[in-house]
Image 1: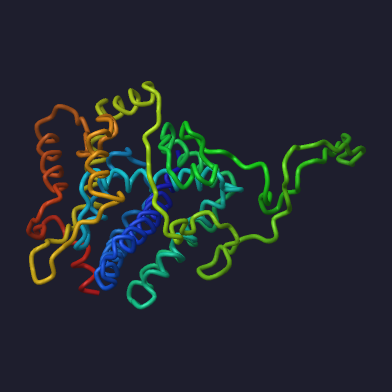
Image 2 (image 1 turned 180 degrees about the vertical axis):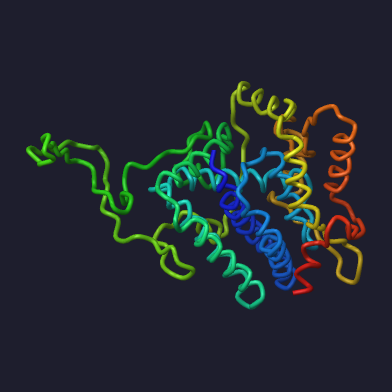
Length: 379
C-alpha cells in the first residue's frame, strides 16, 4: 500500500463532488449567487493551507467510513443541506466515477493527469476569486513537487492502492449504463480501442532477439482491437493540455443521473463485516480524523441568509423511496469504529463522534483549533 495515495483520492473525489453539486444546483434552479457561494465555500474548505499540509503527510489510507465522514462535513461547509439519501447518492456517484477513471488510466502515472483535470475544472468554478485560485495553484505546485519525481513502479503502487480501496463497489450509474461502459452487474467495460499509453506501440507485432540482444525475427498477430498511437503526452505542469479526458466534467450536459445498488449477498456481507469488525488502526484513525476535521466547521443556518436543501434525486418522492429501500449494510449514517475497550479511548471516540453531528452548533473551542473557514478569513 502506498503512503502517497490519500491526497490523490481526496482531491479527485472532491472534484467529482463539485461536478455533481454544480449540476444539481443548476437543475434545481438555485439562484446563481447562492450556488456560487456553496461551491466557493466547499472549495475554500478543501484547499485550506493547514488542511492540505496535513493531507500531504505520508500516511496509509483509512477506511471508507472514515473518509466518507470527511465528505459529509465538506458537503455541509456552506449554507446547503443534504439529507441522508441524497448524501448517499452523492457519495456513490463520486466513488464510482473515480473508480472508472482509475481503471481506464492508460498508464499508472496518468492518475496524476486525472487529478489535474479535476483541479483545472475546479479553477473554472472560481475564476472570479483570485484568493481561491491561488490556493488551488498552490496545491498544483505541491502535487508536482511530491509526485513529479516518482517512478513508474511507485505510481503503479498508488494505482493498486486506489483500486483496492474501490474493490467490491459495483453501484450502477445511469450515465455509465447508457454509454455502455458499465454492465448491468455494476462492473465496468474496459475498451479495446483508442490510443495506447504514451511511449508504447500499437499491439500486433512480436520481436524476437538473440542472446546478443540483436533482433532476429518479427511476427505479426491479430489483436482484435482498434488501437492507435497516442498523439502526444499530457502536460504535467500547472497549465497545459492534459490530452487525457478522464477526470473532466461528465455532467456538463444536463441529464439526470440515477444510481442503483448492485451486488451479491457476499459483497453485502463483506461490507457489513468491514463496518463492524474491530479495527486495529482505530486509534490512529481517530487521531487522523481529529486533525483533519477538528476545524471543518458546518455552517450555521441562522442569520439573514437562510440555508436551503439540495435534492440529488429528480423528486422528493424518489429521495424518500431511496432512503427506505437502501440496504442497511450500505448506510453511512455514522462512522462505526470499534476501538479497543479502553475507557480513555471510548471517551475520545464519543467526543469525536459528537463533533460529527450535522446540526447547528457553536464554533469549536480554541483548544480544538480554529475552524478552517476562520483560518482562511485571517489570510
